[in-house]
Length: 72
Image 1 (cartoon, rainbow, N blue to C red):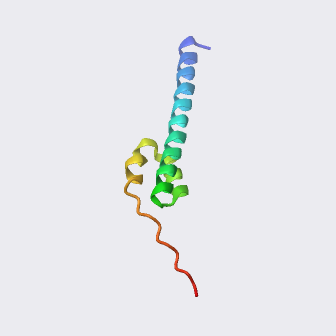
Image 2 (tube, one colour):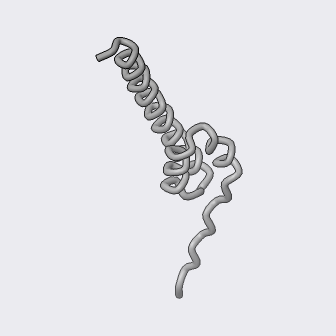
Image 3 (cartoon, helix red, strand yellow):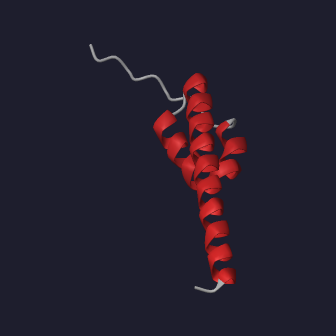
């Protein structure tokens, strides 16, 4: 194998690992912020994983969940 191709493959593997770690971190932060604000934390965790740092500002504007009406 050409040394240049091996170097490019090593760099791409590192980039993949870094991007996955950033996405997981953003998912955790978005989920925690949403849970504290009373928003849907699962939804915001998925958005944090999918969009990474771009989802962080939007989770702060998430509206809290409406309380469920009690049936009598």
